[in-house]
Image 1: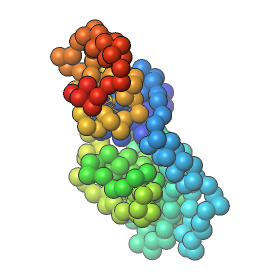
Image 2: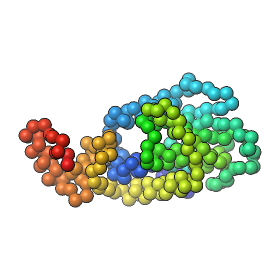
Image 3: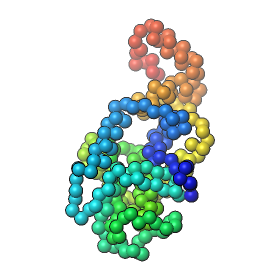
Image 4: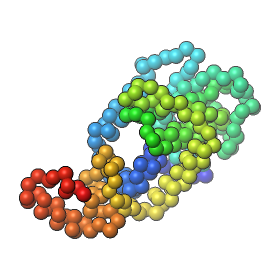
Length: 240
Ligand code: SF4
């Protein structure tokens, strides 16, 4: 169990799965930069937190809900948590008593269903699902009730993608949380080779993967950059 002071942001799981170096730059070195993708993502989250947006009969909706797990050492804000009526739930049945007494903020007989808002489309990697699962695990610990399902809402498709909070995803999320705490405790920002994903990364100009990746020389990179700027605009090949 982690003390409150050691809780890390749930969003850092996604940074870690996208790129360890990006995660370290943000959460060890305290750097941040915006690009089109981060701004679009922020606007989508702000809309999700707007309480005037939708009300659905039989479903209670909490927006911008503060959540945490002392077991995983994580805290954050859930975009939307719906509380669905579930007659299979009772005060004692189907409850997961994981970490001591629960804080019962959920009305009895309602099953939490987290919905995380994401820009773009469903991705081939697991980062979005892990972030959603971490929210589900936080809700389980806080409410002492099983969270079996959730959804990812993608801004580009304007659709929800259902996510099962199954054992494989729980295990991947536990592992990722452990890796995140190990990385932050190390205090070391790893070097990472430039990859196609760097072109979409908001941290590109702070990271400088062309000069700082494994086997790269920062001084040679600076010399090349100075020579290139002295001889005019860079061509596509200068990135290779
Ligand atoms: S620019 Fe590339 S290597 Fe650097 S943080 Fe972003 S994804 Fe990682």
